[in-house]
Image 1: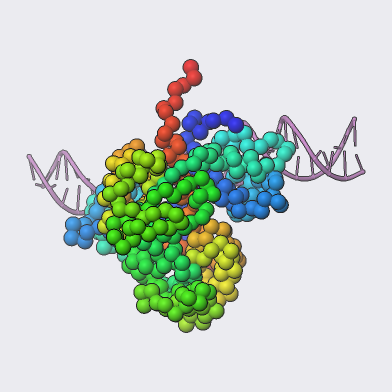
Image 2 (image 1 turned 135 degrees about the vertical axis):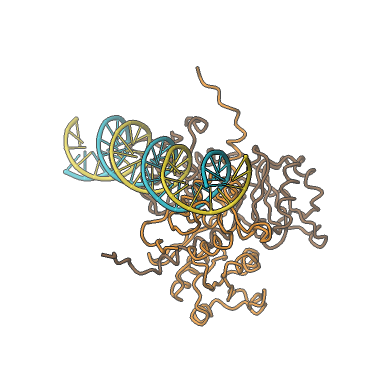
Length: 221
Length: 221
DNA sequence: TAAATTATGTTATATTCTTAACAAAGGAAC
DNA sequence: GTTCCTTTGTTAAGAATATAACATAATTTA
C-alpha cells in the first residue's frame, strides 16, 4: 500500500466514512465474513459502492481488480490510515455520568485506544477506580501525561471548566482534545481540537423530523 | 421570513452549521450581543462570513442589507427552521451512565426538548427518579409515547438491545430515533434514524493527530 | 449633504465531492 | 480452453457545495 495520505488533501467526509467502514467491519461475525465486496459493505451503510471504492482509491492498495476485499486486510489498512495501528493513550477529565460512560465504553480499547487516567476535582470521586483506573486530582494531569505518553484528552467537565481544562491539557503537552462540553474550546493551531456538541445532533434530528412531517409540496401553478 | 424550506433541498452541512450557529448564539452574553455580524459569528466558529450568509440565504429573511443581524431574530429564525419553536417531547431508553448523562444534559431543555420518560429493564433502576422523571419498565413505552406525544427516542442501551429497542420505539409510534449504541440500527423509510457512533469521532481525532505529526512533505524532485 | 465605510442579499464563479462509465483481472460455468 | 459474470481500480462526467464578486442599503464621518 502506498503511503499517499500526505500527497493530496483527503476530504473530511472520506475520513468519517473510513471510520464508519472500520466500525462496521469490526462488528461483523468473523466466521461469515472472510471477504466482502464494496456492494455488500455499501448496503450495510446505505451508501453507493462507488463511493467506497473512491474513498479507498485516495489511498490505494486495498484490493485487487477481480477479487473481493479481504476483511482482515481492509481492517488493517483502515487502522493504519486512521492511526490506530499503534496503541494510543488517553485520559478523561470530568468523572460525572458522561465521563464514566466514556470510561466504560468498550469499543475504544478495541481500537487500540487505552484509558490511562481519570481526573476530577471533586474530592469524593478522587481515589475511586473505574475499570482499574484510579480517579486522580486534576493537578496530577501533567505528570500522568508525561509518564504515560498521553496523546488525547477527553473533556467531560461542565461548561464552566471546559476552557480551563483545555488550557491545562495543552500546557501538559497533549496534542489532541475531544471536547464534550457544550461550549467550544480553542487553542493554538498545532493542537487538534474536536468539539463534539451533542445538541447539534439533536437539533439535526429535530429538523429532519419537521421536514418528514411536511406534506408533499403542491406546485403553486 | 419566507417558508421556503420545502422548495429546494437544503444541504446536510448547512443544517449542521445552522445548529452550530444557534448553539453559539445561545451561549453569548445577552447584554453584550444585541447584534452580530456574519464576520463576528464566522470568527467564533472558524468559518468564512460568506458561508454563513449563503446558509441563511437558503431560507431568506434573516437580516437586511446594511444592518447587522439582530441576535434575537437570528435565534428565533434558527429555532423555527430547526423545528425548535414548539416543544418536543423525548424519552431515553437505557439508564446507564450514558443515559443518565443525557437525562441531565441541561442544554436540551433550553431548546424546547423536554424529557418525559426514562426506561430500563433493570428492576433496580425502575422506580428511581432523575430530575423529576421516574424510571419505568420498557413495557410502559407505548403508553407514555401515546400519553405524552413523544416524538423522539434516544437509545442508550448496550449494543445487544439496540435494534430491539428501536423496533419497540417504532411500533410505539415514534418517528425519530437518536442511537448512541455502537451498532447501527435500521427501520422503515419514514422513520428518521440518526446513528451517533462515538467511535467515529474518536477515530477522526486519531487520524488528524497522525496527520499533524507528519513532517512537511519534501517534493521528490 | 456627500463620500466613505461597513453591512447584507444575491448572483456568478471556482472548487470539491459524488456518481457514472469503463478497462483490467479473477473466478465460474460450460 | 473459452465465454460470461463479477469485482476492483481508475478516469471522466456530473452534481453539489463553498467562495468570491458585486449590487443595494444603512451608518458614520467630513
